[in-house]
Length: 76
Image (cartoon, rainbow, N blue to C red; front, side):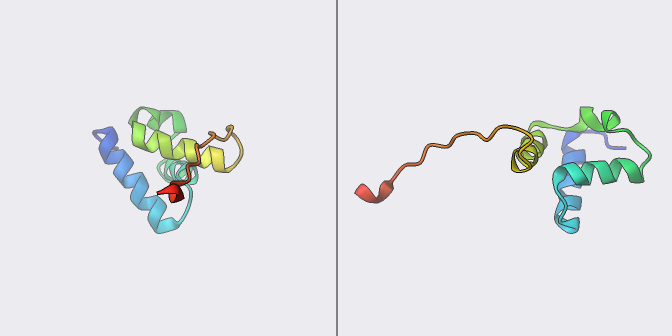
Protein backbone atom coordinates (compact mmCIF):
# COMPACT_ATOMS: atom_id res chain seq x y z
CA UNK A 1 0.00 0.00 0.00
CA UNK A 2 1.05 3.58 -0.47
CA UNK A 3 2.08 6.00 2.24
CA UNK A 4 0.78 9.18 0.59
CA UNK A 5 -1.92 10.17 -1.88
CA UNK A 6 0.81 11.59 -4.14
CA UNK A 7 2.51 8.18 -4.40
CA UNK A 8 -0.78 6.46 -5.17
CA UNK A 9 -1.70 9.09 -7.75
CA UNK A 10 1.62 8.78 -9.56
CA UNK A 11 1.29 5.00 -9.62
CA UNK A 12 -2.26 5.13 -11.02
CA UNK A 13 -1.28 7.72 -13.63
CA UNK A 14 1.64 5.55 -14.75
CA UNK A 15 -0.58 2.46 -14.95
CA UNK A 16 -3.21 4.39 -16.92
CA UNK A 17 -0.60 5.58 -19.45
CA UNK A 18 0.86 2.09 -19.85
CA UNK A 19 -2.47 0.30 -20.15
CA UNK A 20 -4.24 3.07 -22.10
CA UNK A 21 -7.21 2.66 -19.77
CA UNK A 22 -9.20 5.46 -18.19
CA UNK A 23 -8.33 6.46 -14.65
CA UNK A 24 -11.55 4.88 -13.43
CA UNK A 25 -10.75 1.57 -15.12
CA UNK A 26 -7.17 1.70 -13.87
CA UNK A 27 -8.23 2.18 -10.24
CA UNK A 28 -10.78 -0.63 -10.50
CA UNK A 29 -8.18 -2.92 -12.07
CA UNK A 30 -5.66 -2.00 -9.36
CA UNK A 31 -8.26 -2.80 -6.68
CA UNK A 32 -9.12 -6.15 -8.27
CA UNK A 33 -5.45 -7.15 -8.59
CA UNK A 34 -4.78 -6.24 -4.96
CA UNK A 35 -8.02 -7.60 -3.47
CA UNK A 36 -9.13 -4.14 -2.38
CA UNK A 37 -12.43 -2.34 -2.46
CA UNK A 38 -12.51 1.07 -4.14
CA UNK A 39 -13.47 2.52 -0.76
CA UNK A 40 -10.12 1.23 0.57
CA UNK A 41 -8.18 3.47 -1.82
CA UNK A 42 -10.53 6.47 -1.72
CA UNK A 43 -8.41 8.18 0.94
CA UNK A 44 -5.44 8.09 -1.47
CA UNK A 45 -7.20 9.94 -4.30
CA UNK A 46 -5.79 13.45 -4.30
CA UNK A 47 -7.27 16.52 -6.02
CA UNK A 48 -5.44 16.17 -9.37
CA UNK A 49 -6.42 12.50 -9.68
CA UNK A 50 -9.98 13.31 -8.59
CA UNK A 51 -10.18 15.91 -11.37
CA UNK A 52 -9.01 13.34 -13.92
CA UNK A 53 -11.57 10.81 -12.70
CA UNK A 54 -14.26 13.48 -12.89
CA UNK A 55 -13.22 14.21 -16.47
CA UNK A 56 -13.52 10.47 -17.27
CA UNK A 57 -17.10 10.53 -15.95
CA UNK A 58 -17.88 13.65 -18.01
CA UNK A 59 -16.56 11.97 -21.18
CA UNK A 60 -18.81 8.99 -20.42
CA UNK A 61 -21.77 11.40 -20.03
CA UNK A 62 -22.19 10.31 -16.43
CA UNK A 63 -21.76 13.92 -15.24
CA UNK A 64 -23.01 17.06 -16.93
CA UNK A 65 -20.64 18.79 -19.29
CA UNK A 66 -19.05 21.98 -18.04
CA UNK A 67 -19.79 24.88 -20.35
CA UNK A 68 -16.66 26.49 -21.73
CA UNK A 69 -16.25 30.07 -22.78
CA UNK A 70 -15.13 30.25 -26.38
CA UNK A 71 -13.19 33.37 -27.19
CA UNK A 72 -12.15 34.46 -30.64
CA UNK A 73 -8.61 35.84 -30.50
CA UNK A 74 -8.60 36.64 -34.21
CA UNK A 75 -9.66 40.27 -33.65
CA UNK A 76 -6.03 41.26 -32.90
